[in-house]
Amino acid sequence: MSKLKGQHEVITTLLITGVLIGVVGSILFWGMPLIQKSKDASVLESSEEFMKTLSSKIKFIANNGGRDQLVITIPGTIKFLPNDPAGPRVQLIVDTQGTIYATEAEIPLGRNECSRIEGTWAVNEPEVLCLTSRELGTNSYVTTYRLNYILLRTEGVVSYQIVLTGSDATSGQGHTLYLENTGTQQTENLINTVVSIDIV
Image (cartoon, rainbow, N blue to C red; front, side, top):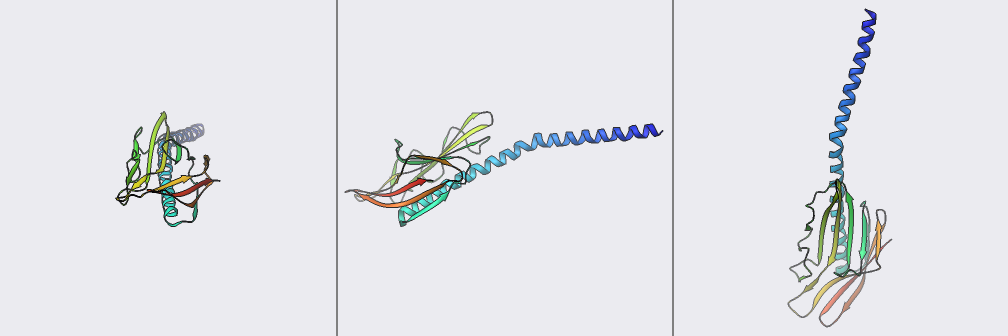
């Protein structure tokens, strides 16, 4: 009888251990993708907020003068492209395992559509802020946020534009963007407000 009791305890222990391993395994199997999806959504939402904050700071400096800075808190690559054929722009590139955006489409994050190259003073915003999310493979996405500024025409003869200047730069998390209003450049019918960008 004591032999059966000892076997019973061993079998019970093995069964409980097996059940626990099965439960933990299924939690990991079903839970990890949900955790990763939540993490990716948080990174992408933070990236969007970062670019909106950057745009707000640039507009404030352009309108009021002075300087400001913004620490890069996003786990991605930020680029300043002053010589881009479409005009000076800031890009943020973020790699994730999932996305919260439609893929292969340009998505505006402001009131201007992504293809806009000029607008009307007091009707359009001075910036174009858009993103594109592309699927690179299974569980691999790259989302590119871009920020550039457009010419705003008035009913009169003078037009206005925020112009970004600085050196071509690429950096990432933990570095800082320095922004400074360096004055205006004026021609007969155009006033450019120049904001320099430096990534350190």
